Image (tube, rainbow, N blue to C red; front, side):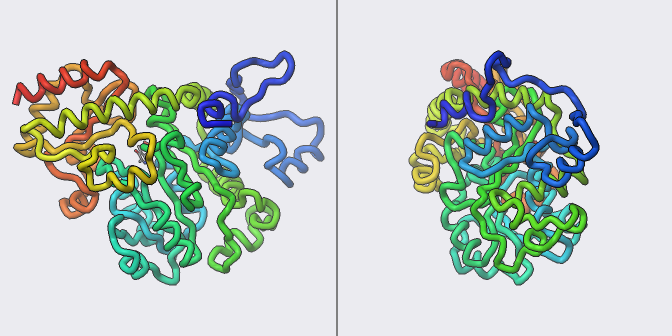
Length: 421
Ligand SMILES: *Cc1c(COP(=O)(O)O)cnc(C)c1O
């Protein structure tokens, strides 16, 4: 099936007389005829449902759909994008380990990697996404367990060279994890370029309507964990009656381990109702993404031609530093988010933003409605000036998330904002 069809039909196929739409299974647990059958469920939890802290039929349908969209073997939903990022790392890193991350990633992820991971004894080594292969290679240590990057970085809008980073990661025997939130599987499928694990904040385009906070982790099922660096995957799990994930669950050992260990222990599973809403959003993902790309390119060109604007970052623009990479990885378009720097710095940016009537000031992005945010005083507020520069953020930078309104209305709103400064 093509992706438009997958969005509607993967994950749930009703049988004779069953509901057309995936039902909300609002139940904490599942009933079995005997304690022997429950014991069997524990022996192989991929066969039946145990408890809604780590699996639920509504969420399961969405997980199957997202795994199909990304071309992965299996997926696990989480209660937020942050939970997905956290679990994706902790699943294969422990105290004493390190991992490599691109500097150009979401501010919340930088916080998690630099502060919280450090407290857990895990070191994050940052590399510039534009560093040379040799510079990236030099960042590896013996204890390095993975490489992490973002397809289109929020909010710097750098495009991550997935294939190049995947090759370097694999040469070092570790997987590449890609946060594909802004691109969505409609615009880019990182697994096709060599990524091993894909994560998302589903709160953004996937849901699309700003009605649920959620995340997901997808396992390509392709990474070879048996090279010796990952005893957590290849040796018996004492907390799960001696299971060896790479042997028993070779189709997707990473995701089964994440569910049976991390989800069991952390309990960051989404509610069935949230998964229902996420599924509803996914059904229309392709039509929405097409229109976001079209609207945002029109708005980016308008901003680029405006003399009150110092610079525009939108990989869809031919003048953009990342346009070549965008042509390779994002041939259908580069989504709806634009970053631009207004002349006059922080105060002018505030005046401009406060003058807008249609675009709302809010801590969200990739919503169906146009919204706007000042990263330096909101999502990236906790970062030092140095970290801000590394993440590609300037004091006068505005993140504009172009919605699905008529693009002429969006541009008229921006025009009256410029007139006010
Ligand atoms: C928002 C976002 C996250 C965090 O997701 P939440 O659902 O807000 O927890 C992670 N990565 C990227 C790229 C994001 O935009």
